[in-house]
Length: 292
Ligand code: ZN
Image (tube, rainbow, N blue to C red):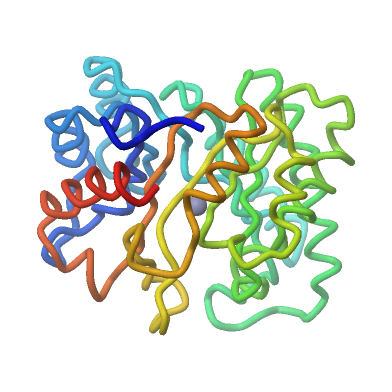
């Protein structure tokens, strides 16, 4: 297992972590500069942040600084109520692949979606099995496009509390079942993003990480689970402040040969987004060394 205590060369910052500083939305260009100043070598930006700054601007900045992308957030949201919705999702995902290629991302992370309409507050139906089959079909189709573009797809299983509105793939086992069905020969084109926040509780986690193996382990996301958790989406903790045994899980991932970045991804409207982003980045570096 790699020793992270001496430096932060394997730290990546998911840019949502510093999306806000003192409650104010921050431009991605400034976030990138702040990371570079601290010797952070990798980021994982969100599409909306890239779009706001302009893809060419961000692409140029990333290249100028020699920054790597541990992933690109995100594609997915495949299920829809009708053919037009499915088509719109398909086209949007292809654009996400194109953007990920332009930014030379390690993978495009997929948050697969769930019941159509649920995220907006009203689910159009209750058939989660239908959503799951649309997800599988959507990934199958996107995979062909992504393979041609040489952009790996990483399915991120989300904690079951998001099964209705964000992702109907909720365990690593489920994600790997989809991988095995769509990419049985393990071409390296399809795998998973292991986010400790979503999977730490799973009694099958270690076994499924072993099942994934090096070729399917494409991204490793860290933060912490607070007790109590006060918001379903935006109360993620800083590594070391909660109950997740992050180092143990990293050990399992690295035992399979994963040697990529440890990506800090914290959504925290009540705490970290209220602080100065300089403090947040400095804390990420310290905790990466001490608690990851
Ligand atoms: Zn994640």
